Length: 201
Image 1: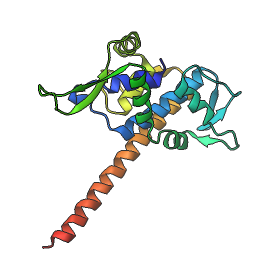
Image 2: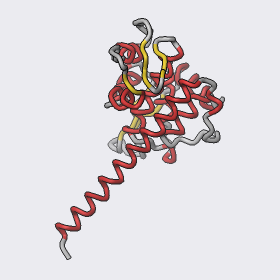
Image 3: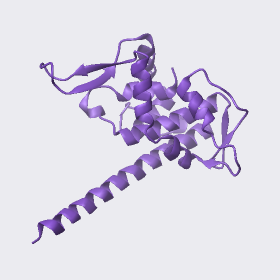
Image 4: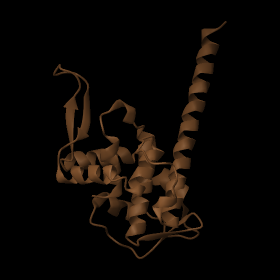
C-alpha cells in the first residue's frame, strides 16, 4: 500500500467528526503520491519545484500514473501546481481502485435496505496496516491527515517529518487546502448575495 491509499482509508472512517471534503482529500492524495515518489528517488524538490529523476514504473498503478504525469520540461512544475493538476478528481480514482481491490466495501446507513449508501474500509491486511500506521502516529500520514481536518492528536509541528522536501510538500498541501476553503467561502458569500438580490427588499 502507498501513503495515498493509507490516507484514503483513514479518511473513509465513518465517524462524522472525520468527514473530509473530496477536493481537500484529492489535494492531499496528490501530495502523498509526491512524497512516495520522493521516497522512491523518482523526484526531488528544488526551490519548491518538482524535479523528476530517471523514469520509473512503480508497482502501484496509481503511483505509476503519477510518475508518468510528471513534467519533465524545465523550469519544472511548482509543487502547488502539481497538487492542483494531479489532484483533479483524484479521490474518485482512489475510491474506484480501492473498491476494485476489495479494500473498500459498500454499506447502507440505517436499518432499512434502501437507506443511503456509503463506502467504508473492509477488514483486509492492507487496511489493518494503514490503521496501524495511523495509530502509531506515523508523521507523514498524520501530517497529511491533519491537512484535511483529521486530528491525530499530534501537534501541528512539522519538524518531525525529518526531510526538508517532505516538509515542503506537506506545507504546500496545507496551503492548497486552505486556498480551496477560501474559494468555497467566497462562492457561498457570492451565492448568498445573489439570492438576496433576487429575493428583493
